[in-house]
Image 1 (cartoon, rainbow, N blue to C red):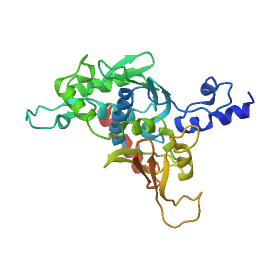
Image 2: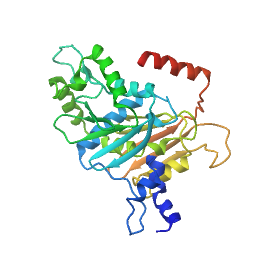
Image 3: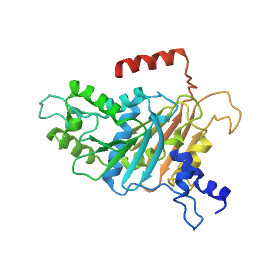
Length: 307
């Protein structure tokens, strides 16, 4: 295949996942079709990806990579995430994901309020990384890009505060109840969140600080970036391109310089997923954050606390 044509066929997937052309070139077929992004095969895989995505969004903008994710390798039965090898980022991933159960015994309380982190989440060291999973389920997320020893040190420090659920081989009753309550939610947009995590690099802007946040709102999903990409790029990647989700744009307020001159800042795009009827409301706040002295000092303080 012509090298220029091959580059074109992997372009959208590279922009959405951060994968290299060399790695993707092996996946190209003789049909001449551009590469797409596989969907999670099972609902449990999508649910795991969605809940991990929601939790680590609390991290905010600590690097030039959204959520500290440098590269995504999406497969039907597995999602591999390469994280930046930054102690603050890894420490926050452990902190926000680590399951912990409160001692409150009020029988009338929603079990979801008694579990912090991801109910049922466990981690296991594997060659070259850390595997996140739930006991008895096939769903898994593989974390790479850092020394597993560092993850183990962070997890060990959390055990002194939260206990050792991350290493427990089975579920606690409270975790099982919280999981059942989560999965029973009507119109839970976990498929949308899974699809977005598999395209997380599409939300990255060109600045030195990137932050992506997602949360459920009413019957849909809210997606927010603080210094995201031009709207035209994001819309193309999420709608009808080879890696698109088939979403439709129902409203748009854009102040990107690539579109037209403007005096105000901030953009918003309303998407609709025709397959589910669920909306996704996107906003780019355009804070233009930089790695100034205050941010460098903040990161240094976080390193001292987390490590």
